[in-house]
Length: 128
Image (cartoon, rainbow, N blue to C red; front, side):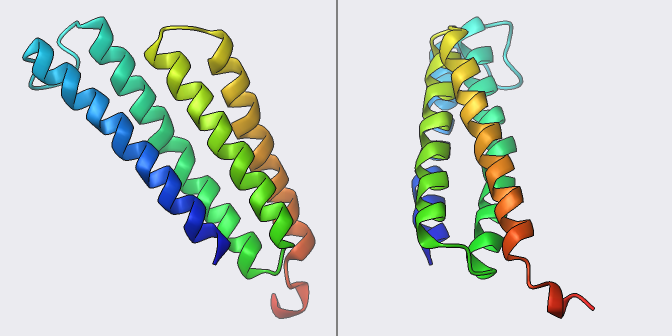
């Protein structure tokens, strides 16, 4: 299953972002929330944003694969999504705007393509 490959890679990204939060918590001795520490706010934002977009995109990808979408569409969307998530996370952690915008454009673009693929490959004959 192609989606499993991208789920594994993106799980690694989520773990990496969680480690960034842990590092900031330890460095600044903050137990809850962000303690008013900008670096921790940024790390939490990067992790939270990834946690919001990764699951639904993997669900869309898994459904597209299940419905019979071409494997190359799955790889193209998977690679673009990973690139978008990496650009976005790096930009947030560095408090930069440019990578965030590009990362979100890629993220939303992939989501729209997966939505369309699911509509195209949806087995309409089995819906009713």
